[in-house]
Image 1 (spheres, rainbow, N blue to C red):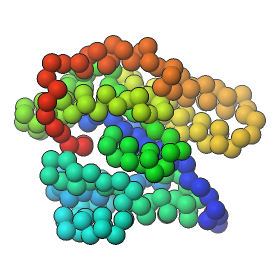
Image 2 (cartoon, rainbow, N blue to C red; image 1 turned 180 degrees about the vertical axis):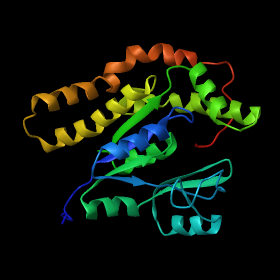
Image 3 (cartoon, rainbow, N blue to C red; image 1 turned 60 degrees about the vertical axis):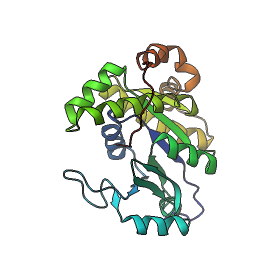
Length: 239
């Protein structure tokens, strides 16, 4: 029986659409125990094989607005005429269940969470460059060219917020990225425990530390340069 006194570690993961975030999150949830995943609420219609309660909780606009009035969200925002939000109840459930909480949210939502929960661990996932991101988007998407270009412009804007995050993970090799993301989550737990680390645990922490913002700035320069384009106008939506 878990203790209700448990204070969950909160992990925020953000990334531009097409960065491979969903794959990494799914692998993380398979391999790391005691980790609750917060499923966002949205007023947009389901796409393809999406089902309610799996990818999102799909609700009507009036219902979402009622939840806002009742202060049911840790964060919420509007994109392309649709609302998206993270329900406060997930944090309460994680606390009651003695588990930690994983939030998969965009940079705007992350900023709101960081204000309310300043001790949250934030992780930003980057593609290796703009060309790779565009190739991934084209491969997976049925969107028209206009929507595709808007997603790329949105990605550029989101990437400009990278320095608000504790860790930056460049997703160039999937297996390596999975290992590093697991290391970050486990490392934060080890550091909070405040006990001496074993040799293997120390290696885990060192692997995670390689992705701390202060340690990756030089590596990020060519990636950031690849996203600097003359056209910065437009909007977008979360994935």
